[in-house]
Image 1 (cartoon, one colour):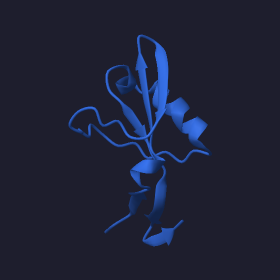
Image 2: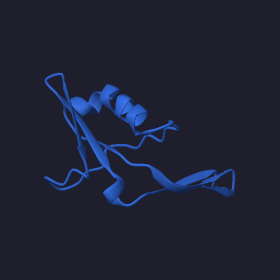
Image 3: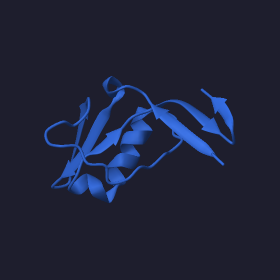
Length: 83
């Protein structure tokens, strides 16, 4: 039984977050320097992009990888479509 699914907005809506040597780096657009690799997914309900960047900065992976922040376009929750 499907409980939840999210569809991401296009890559144009992406913000990438990294933290190298303690310095936060935020840039518009996806990170496309090398082959893409997905290490995991976090789905958070946050009020805005600034809040999402704050959470991405705290992610341990931001110190060695790139955190892609992208809003969802639509979702299914408990079998019902939401926007």
